[in-house]
Length: 65
Image (cartoon, rainbow, N blue to C red; front, side, top):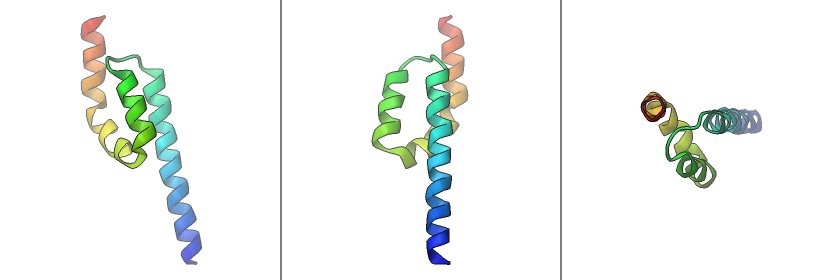
């Protein structure tokens, strides 16, 4: 049973990372390359921080046109 919980946790983390990574690629906001690098080097932190700043990044995108 312990292995199941481990595998389920890893699968959920990978799914969350994939959703965040696809969202970063889909929206063309400033400093997108930095977020992609951050997503590759520190996936768990990206999954935590990107949803918090997503609205701010999209507002910057709208301001720049």
